[in-house]
Image (cartoon, rainbow, N blue to C red):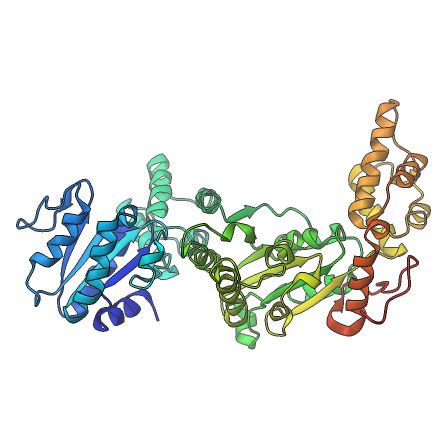
Length: 506
């Protein structure tokens, strides 16, 4: 059901008070005007704080700088007069007791009248006493067809050639932007040269990055890491490489559904975050990083709104990678108590979307402590696969040393005894190996020479790996993976450790 269908259904069902969070006032009002004509030819009344009502001579200026008067205008019209009253930025006045009381009165009196009050605001800000009377309606970002129509209109107005390939690239790049932002960035490009060219796609992408940054929930993350930058994890790499073309039209024709995503569970510093970045680079998809902690707001309905906003934006930018780092910390031990059930609703919305999504949003979630994850998150159907990423074996440590030393000292790689380095660093994670090399470089730099094998071994002797300081947690993770609850990311994965034998009771 699209926005117009849902909105018209609410009009026919006599929902008197609607709340639509969007920054696209112009586009929303055009959509509401279309619905108003289809549902009994209802009149539109537009109000804002500065100019009051201004849609016809009878009410021009009425309610200027007086939000209570704006509501009283609804009562001045005959009960049989059908109308939709759009109140811009009215969320700022909802805390006023007179406004709140008036709206609650309307919730009863307008049920039998063909009138609807629509509050339009850039964000959801609803006091608790109004949550039962206000119905929140989502207004989605422009679809691909809407963007294509706008791009063609701008190109036609500038007498630019309508190159089909360029239009497709611009539409794909503009997914997730408002029409106003699309107009602004393309008009700027046209004003510069008088026409559009393929290089202007980068301008659109930069505008998209700016938009995502402004959400303060998602980050547009640059992904330059490659699959070859990951040492070891051969099973995981093979799984990813087989799905490299899964987002193509050819895959849809073959009958393959869009991949859902991965849950990478395991020990800290073993390459889970690096894998998320490498997937985006290898599949040539934008990488969005979600900080789940930012979803939770202080106002009633704000957290749920941010969750819906995040899902909407991710789907509008699809195909893309949605990276959720350390998801276990976000939903650790939640029970919905003490926050009026906000955590439960946010979590429920999120996992329902994971199960039911049809859009090409590939979710990569990482978790260090699976004990903290709710069981619902681990149920089949949320992700395509759950991989366990454990401590690297000696062969994998050798590969990790080769990756880092090839980047740091590509011309003197042969000077390092990588076999010995891998042997002398048991139970080191990939992050700890990297830190060892950094410390070795400090040693060499402080003595005005290049760092050597001995420097690396000295640095390694000074580092206490996590395997020694978090033995219990690692034993649990290994036992959890050994029970068959996750697929091993490495062919040479060690589920037993020289630190301590597995505890079968876990």
